[in-house]
View 1: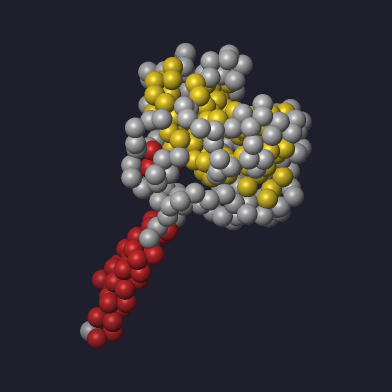
View 2: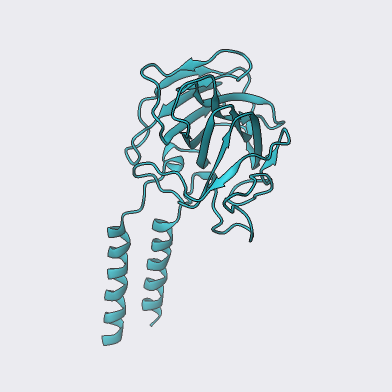
Length: 270
């Protein structure tokens, strides 16, 4: 009986690992989801400020400039093979809107990966921006990445005018998967645009985007300037795979479940 219980416990733990969106190297996750969040949060039509779901965060979302126009759409953004919560996403159209969320603990060494799904809901050009800022421990703007006038880019800071645009045709509507690798020790940043999920870390779309004086990462901001953008599936982790998790294969869970049945049947015959 003890062997059966031990085997069953191991199987249940394995199932949990296979089906959970969290991974060991994942430091923070925000799926814009009411699942597991306090009652009444992440409701379609709600303001983003004050919502506090997800894991690995030290604060709820804060409206930095008093903005109240981020609204939850009823459907989450999706990307091929990327594990998503599929609940809601947050959008904003027009004006200057800035929301911030701090990590539970600042990261001060090594390489940090930040990923996000961004969709241009207007699906057009124009001088508008939808991006993420990553912040120092004190909240200073260290750098940005996202969409500017329908082109992907990464920059040291939105205010410095040092953008590096991804070459090629303007982006389609999306959603687009942005992953940024921030090498704190060497003050380097690399951008991965629309990588294939499940195939490991590819060559960067833009490499060696230099920052000056990255002492650590303490939080992020969502920033929309004009346009109409949606954001979803924000992750912070220590590996590329942790911020681009592959959808668990049903066959894996089924195999484990079959193993559980075999263990139980053998036990019943004993």
